[in-house]
Length: 340
Picture 1 (cartoon, rainbow, N blue to C red):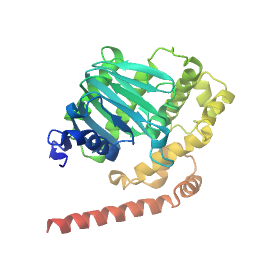
Picture 2 (cartoon, rainbow, N blue to C red; picture 1 turned 60 degrees about the vertical axis):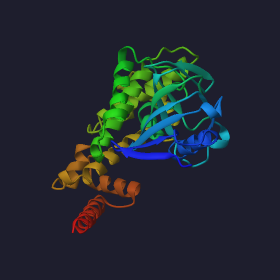
Picture 3 (cartoon, helix red, strand yellow; picture 1 turned 90 degrees about the vertical axis):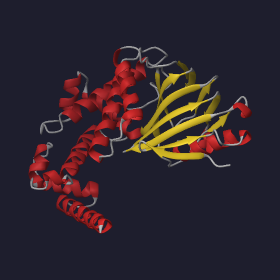
Picture 4 (cartoon, rainbow, N blue to C red; picture 1 turned 60 degrees about the horizontal axis):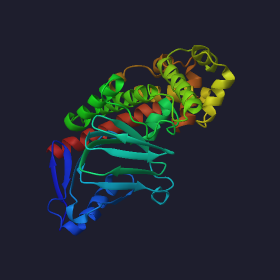
């Protein structure tokens, strides 16, 4: 018996209704392990188990709508493989009740509640009855680059009934159930907005559960990165100006970025180079000079920018623009050939 697969509204749907009862849990686990960080599932009654999942990719986001009978999901150390992509996982509970355990904490999620967890470390999920939830995962680096480490915000319930949690809940619902966006730039904007809302929501969590010192460090690092990304075009941006804006010493700022394994000055330069490359590869800015792009993102010397760009990307800014144009021309030629 095969899993029932269907397509609709740009999503893939899997239902276990036509799967023989004794095989449903196995099929369910195999389905999830094909799209989701590896884990193991167990159910209290194999003969009564049922489930349905719909999913799609949107840029770097995985969006899922999951309905199921009672089950326990465990991601153990044996499931975590060196070098595999690390993702932040987010659940929005729609029906039923669940419990998440990670990083020495456990939390309960009820309809409207949101919780996040990290695929890089073991966790357990418990559902003692039928449930429905919306699930999203995205590359951990998207979160880490803005907030820092995840250890202090996993397995902490974000209420969806008030405050920023209500906006986050509504946004996740729209993203999973109603958004059919495929444009690359739009998808990137949507995923960054999701991460921004998540960071705002976890920043508003109480400082309990033994997280005060580490949580304060994580929040200060998040503020530092936010200030930097908002001021990349300022030629005078430096560790000293960042520290002054945050009201901390330069030594403390350097210590914060030590956890990131990249000095703060290097982080500033890396973000400037990323913005420059994005503009260089943007066909809408093809008439803009390379030096103008560099100066707009805080570089003050064209030769220095060119050297830094080559060292970071292994090609010159001019070569990057030429490669992008060539790639676009090939894609256009293929598209025209397909239409013949």
